[in-house]
Length: 412
Image (cartoon, rainbow, N blue to C red; front, side, top):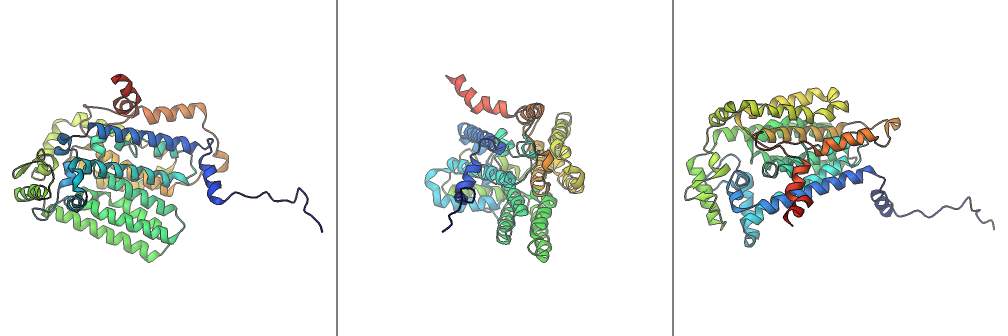
C-alpha cells in the first residue's frame, strides 16, 4: 500500500467560521482599526447623550419631535409618534425619557453597524475617508442634539440599500429593500422633507433590484416615488392646527407620559409647537443670519473631497447634482443647515459604497505616512453644528473632551 508522502498530505483546514473569525481578528487588517474608531465615537456619543439628556431636553426641539402623533387628527410628522404610543404601552414602566433615549441610541448603533457592514467588502483605499467623515456616519455622535433625530432612520435605510446593492443573494436583496421601504414610509410620514431625498433612494432601489428582476427594479421605485409624493402632499394639506397640538398633548397625557415640560394644557413647546409656525418665520430668521449660514457651504465642499478624489463624483455627478437640487429648497424653509448637509453626505456615502469600483491590485498598498497623517487630520479635526454655525464647531476632540476620557480626568 502506497502511503502519501509528506508533500502530498493535505493539512486539515479550519472550519469556515473559524477562518472568518481569524481574518476578522487579524491585527494587520486596517479595517479593524477603522471599525474600532467608529465604535469609540459612537460610544462617546451615546455616553454624551445619556449624560446630557434631561426632561428639559425632551421638552425642547431636541426630541419632542418624536412625540408628534395623530391624537388630534392627521397631521404631518405624526406616524412615528403614533407608533411610539403603542411602544409606550408595552414599556410604560420605564418612563418617557428612558424610552426616547433607548429609541435614539438603538437607531444610532444599528445605523453604525449597517454602514460598517456595507463597507466591509468594498476594496477601495478611500473607504476610511468616506466612512469616517465627520459629516456622515459619525456626525450623529458629534452633534448629539441635532443628530439624534429622525435622520437616524434615513441612515439605516440607506445602509440597508447599499448592502443590497453588494449582495448576490436575491432573497437578501428583496428583504433589505422591503425593510428599507418600510423605514422610508415611516420616515416620510414622520418628517415630510424626506421626500426631497428621493433621487438617492430610487437609484439604490433600482441598482439593487435589477439583478433580481428588471420589472421589480422599475416597479418599486415608481411605488416609492408615489408614496413620497402622497406624503409630501398630505403634509401640505395638514400642516398642523391648534386642535392638532391640543390633541397631541391630550394623547400623551392619556398614555401616562410625563410631559410636563412638553405640554402645558392645550399648548406645547419645541417641535410640537413648531407645527403652528408659518415657514415665513424661518425664512425671515435665516435671512437675518445668512453670512453665518454660508459657512455651511465650506463644510459641504470639504465633505465632498473623498467623493471627488476617489473619482466617483466624476461618474455619478448627475445623481449627486439632482439630489442636491431636490434637497436645496428645504434650506430656505429651515435653519438646520447642518442636518441638511449631513443627510446629503449620508446619501452620497451610501451611493458611493454601493457603486464604487475596487482598487486595481497595484493600488492596494499600505497607507503611507503622509496619507495616514492626512486621514488623521480629516477624521478628527473638523465638523459642524446642526444649526447656527457661530455657536459651536465640533468634531472628535470636542466630543472626547465633552464625554470621553479627557472629560473624566477633568472631573477628578
